[in-house]
Image (tube, rainbow, N blue to C red; front, side):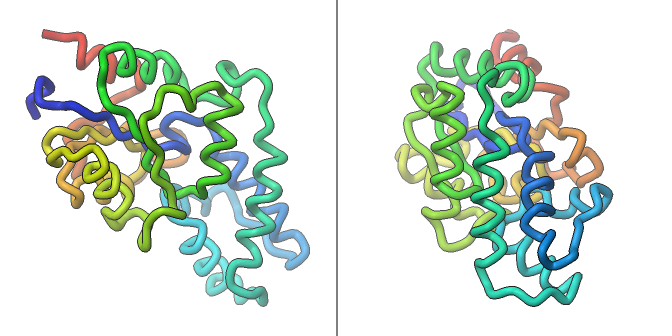
Length: 222
């Protein structure tokens, strides 16, 4: 990858910019309470990076649960919005160096997009409440495409929106399915695994970093 060719940075949201995965788990479990089902934390890594629809379907099959399609997602999303109502975003809601990295690319005139399998409502809530929305030229969510990650649709939407080629775009991801989605869209992809995704396979990533600060250092290096 020639970093001089990169015009756009495409950020995943949960686990990449926002420290929200444990709240997603808590919301799923609270929504599942009435069915006497609980997702053990040791199982949750298989859901990280997957769409809500995929997770709901897997839960239904795995636990032989009796709920209608979309019922669990609707309840889970409502609970999550209440759980993730932070007031101190920089110390609790954002991943380390999240604001610093986004500000860096914004100040250096890169095009910026959010590319997430989350809903638009949830995504906008996080960005507005954390005062991060102002940095992004556009947002693409599960509501904007037919197929979520690991399908490339979300990243293709961003690349096409910017009227760029894949080699001009760098995706930042924390999951295997996200990396696959970005690479299949023709973009470069750097992975930054977190505590929930660190055991996933990141061999397809162009580079695996320790933190978003390493991303800044990469672009600052000669």
